[in-house]
Amino acid sequence: MSLNAEVAAAAHLTEEQLAGFIIEGTKDVFSTMIMMEVADAYPLAEPLGMFHCGVTGMVGLAGSYSGILSIHCPPEFAMLATSNMLGMEVTEIGEDVTDALGEIANMMGGNIKMALSKGGADLHLSVPTVISGEEYTVVALSDKECVIVPFTGDGHRFIVGLKLKKES
Image 1 (cartoon, rainbow, N blue to C red):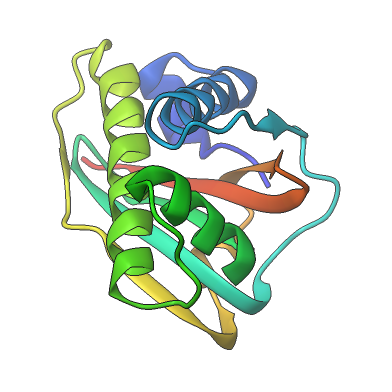
Image 2 (cartoon, rainbow, N blue to C red):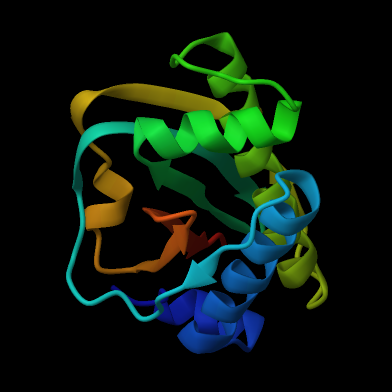
């Protein structure tokens, strides 16, 4: 897993710097909006692609770069984060969880947009998408040109992935 070479050259960023933006943005969103401290475990030790019993929030990026920022977590963590965010107990994956995880992905995507826009990048975010299920594949994360940062929060593991491509 690594940063696309064209993106690195155009943005004047290393994979470690982009991972730093992901880490900083994720910690900021979780501490301010979810009232939870999270810790990163960068770099990722092994490739990912399959998720069992998970929930994924995604937001697309378009403009100077195209790509997707995604957060992948177990259902228990998604419900805990939603509970903290909304200030009420959430006990099932439903509209509250999908709305909250979509908003979390949106805020984290906004942080990446700001980090990349400092170099003059023209970026736009899509409406967030959330999927959940027993088993599914996220193809963007199995690509070698994807920056993935593992995190832990309240005893749960989750990952944040960013796939970017330079547009001509």
